[in-house]
Image (cartoon, rainbow, N blue to C red; front, side, top):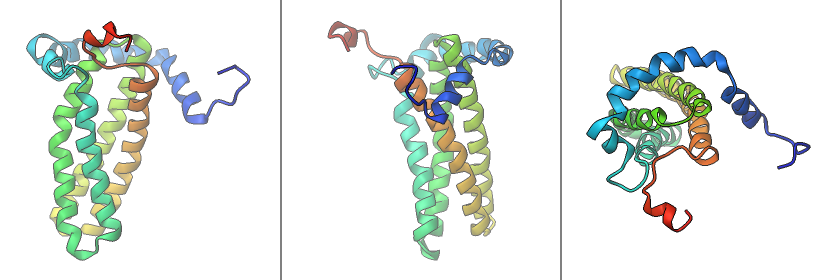
Length: 187
């Protein structure tokens, strides 16, 4: 892309985020904890997906995003009889979010500084989504389906922003584990 081509606003914002050295203090504070908890030894190998041949994180994000998106679809078109299924789907996403986040931290710990900056914002934005979906689940359990659906929509907004950043990291910046056999054929 030449410098005269239009850069879409989300990409321009993300590129600025990559260079935001104000995040370096937070990155430096989080890195040793994350490295010890999620990136070293057998835990790190499992969470990075070494046994799978490529990063585990994208596989797990599909469970979380799919569950939460499906809940919102049921909220929108499923009617009263779909309320229980929507609540269950929010719960499934919440149950899957721990391993998903852990696998993301394992990848994050091995990435470069600009990727860690974006990854930290990705994690914080996901944290907001998790909080909103947890509140949605509680509201639904208390019989306040409308409030739960509204909180899920707010969570979907945060999740979408976080997913954009995650997609940037994996697609544009090539963050993610891959088996050495992939390098042999130029992949």
